[in-house]
Image (cartoon, rainbow, N blue to C red; front, side):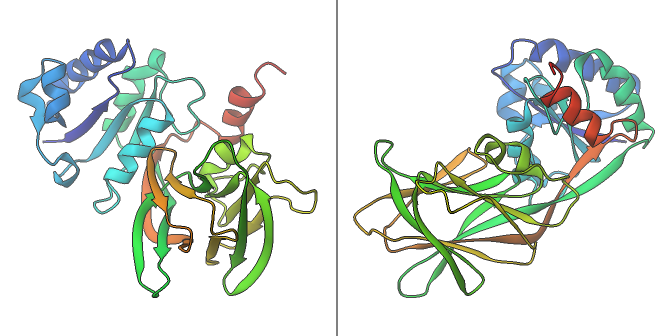
Length: 284
């Protein structure tokens, strides 16, 4: 029996209707859907609830929400890669490949195996302490951002790639983005757009107080190091804008591509550049 994991976003008012359509569709297919137990209770589907869902066998997972919902699900499956398909219930929806008005037809294609899986690089974040001890912060699909802890102050940051110091500057922070994340925070900060299947990392300063630094694309195998120049200041690190860690002034933040990959389900008739055109330039 086919098993499909479903992750509904509580904040979307249309979620219940979409969830019922998904349940009815897979019931007719003789497939089983599973939900995180707490979500199953909230939607009155207790029979579908399971504990520790990310470690349960599943053929694929469905994300009901925006890109943020899908990012969180990918991180949950980081150690047990299950391909995830997004049902767009947000605004832009760069990563989601199913719109609500085409739900059943796309689910039929999923059941038929008529889809591709794009394995996207996870960024891995670490903090190195003054004694050399390294602590793992977590994974991110879009970006790992080092930014000021005090919203009213600019900070002085040093940036190095591998063992080479590149620049020290005053800014609101640095964004280290994957190609997938190039259309997220990095884009808003003036960074370039990268096709998500291109191998590389985007370094984008946030509001730098200088004209001498620009966004930079480096190799996927390069390692990024960011540290505070002025020890009197404070910084935080965010993973996909969803997980936040406060960093001590003498810590060094290291970001690199991980061997772990996230599987994103895509359909052959949905072209990345078509998505760019419709999501970014639809009013042009």
